[in-house]
Length: 69
Image 1 (spheres, rainbow, N blue to C red):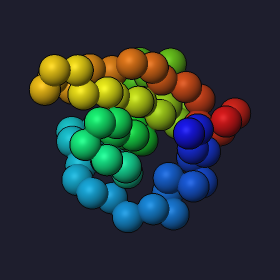
Image 2 (image 1 turned 45 degrees about the vertical axis):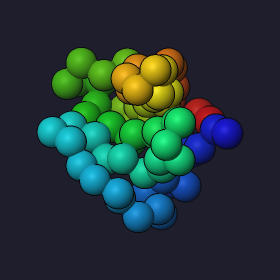
Image 3 (image 1 turned 90 degrees about the vertical axis):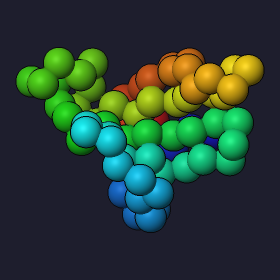
């Protein structure tokens, strides 16, 4: 499923890292909304990261622009 920035902002934050908010976690997939912007080195101003659990290790599988989703 592809989320937009607005959809993720409306969701409860599960936890926060130094630079992103975890918005979705079903045990196999996580969706993070970055709080950083292009000026900080992110590829987009509202980068959304998708992680998948691979053999017990969370790995980033993709990222996209949440404002263009």
